[in-house]
Image (spheres, rainbow, N blue to C red):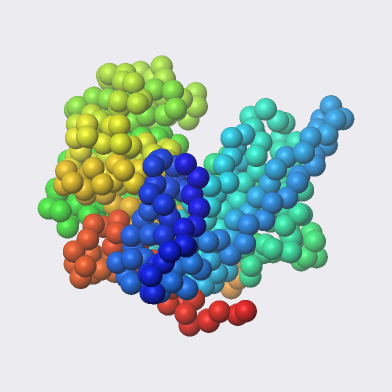
Length: 436
């Protein structure tokens, strides 16, 4: 079902709205949360119309010379959602099946996430439609540099800052930074975040999202009366986010009873040997074939296994309307973007299973991006302890602000986070005014 504006037959003062969302796409999930939050806040029609659309959507063709002498032309995009709070900040992802609506959702989620965390950025998201695995490193570099050059008028430290995402790692960020710098005729370190330390990256960047999830889990567990140690945890995803979170929570005395990657899902009710599994994963780029005591489960059924905390860190809509009734956890902590669909969220809410939304739970990466941008601009770099303490403070303040809204309006954590985000961005837009 396509999602279009519905602005006909409105009564005076009535908000236009999207039609009922009959699918479970990331964009549908994002828009449904926004719509309900806007209505609960009593957002005016003008603010509503502005916030539910991207400020700009840029499409570019990316011609690239391949290693065999032939040419290919890839599609490139940059969605800039809202600049009310400051310059845009958002990821770049590379995928053969890249979808524009997913980029729109991701850009909007970045706006709401920055607002919840009180970070002075608006949200953006970009993508290149290509299969990175089928191209050489040289072809990849030429593609990234040409894509960046096509966007030079629209990106940079004061306009739009890139950060890593799917198939766009610190090497890709380095190429983007260098391309912008060469055209500017001086080094533009703050143009991207997630850079290597050698190129003015910040300490703690790789583990930032996992540390943020750990901090939010501690706060949520205390609020719900869950034990500080000994929780049974299932983590979907064993990459940078899921793998690091598993290591952190295992070292803290919790039982990681389930861990999965794209190939296999491992489960043991007494806990997995996390260090051994992660070592195997690092060597072989998969958990499959790892030594240890565990049961291999179907990845589709894996997340319905019993646990205290479920942390989906892999894909959008991992929890959907077809499996939400079978979820047995006491708490879901969203480690990925949109891992719980809008339909599943309603089912879980009816069942009394709390969900800590992605715009709060996985915000550690956004906070570290902000820290890297600040350090680059000031030329003063912080030690690891300072970075970790300041990150924890941002997340604690965001948690407290969301909880305050939750108590005031008697809503779920997701709705409270969305209401807080929409209110902050709407107030910033109102203060700026509409330039027309």
